[in-house]
Image (cartoon, rainbow, N blue to C red):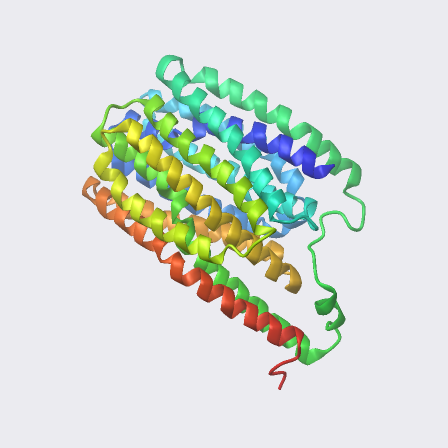
Length: 406
């Protein structure tokens, strides 16, 4: 039941969060006419996401649904601060928006992933793929309507819509949390029987701690590489504003294509991952997608072609995302560290985006190098992902079969 309520929340909350949030960096640029301010806003935003999710991780782990409910407060303050960007208090508006948007997103991203993990303990990759599809449907609708609204309506109208929709989305899930929160098995991380049976053996306990740290470190590196794509849309949309007309609807169509095909790709990849080994497909997708990202800045004036290319990039990205998520969760659940792995995944994404946006904040001339760095880092996953899978598989086999015990 909780999974159904979560999926309902995902559709509406992603709609409410992105109807303005997907364009916030563009709004900052349009208000200041300075790309450095836009990228510095994104750097501060990502840093605060990292800080708050680290500080509140233990609480989020135990009460993720509560944080999804609390999120409405920073979300409201952030939404209202956007209105300051059209006044003489632009700089204050940028700082307040960055702070509260960072807190709002921190209280959404990891708690949403933790809630899904608890709700789908015994589900396969297809369940994750379907959930991602629903999540992206909300993003697509928000982006298209948000782009049209921002081009033709006052900003306060989409802000009111987003706040009301988010409140509607969270109430059923929060009520479910209130009813079940005192149950002993509610919001508990998974752990395998094998690891549970080793808990009283000191040397195995020591081994478990060492292997858990290695697993988390290895997957942190993998996510640092491929989550550079999480910053791709902000990078391209700002570049589009620089090279083409300042038109929100253009960016909306391109983002809708990316997230729409990403959602469909997640659904297909999830179903295939439950049936076949996707390692080779994942490697091909990473390599091809990395090359395409290096091409898109040179076709910026061909909007129809960009819509098509970003659809392909989103579709290929889905296979890498689903593959890495399912393998990481499979291994980390065995060791009882899936919650820490989800937190590491979120932190890796934020750190690599801080690096990407920081690079672009130096000067507008860094746009093209940033695209090449993004493509190259993502393409490197074609080598690093299969290498990591083999290493982590061997570590777990040695641990579970008592190889190299002494």
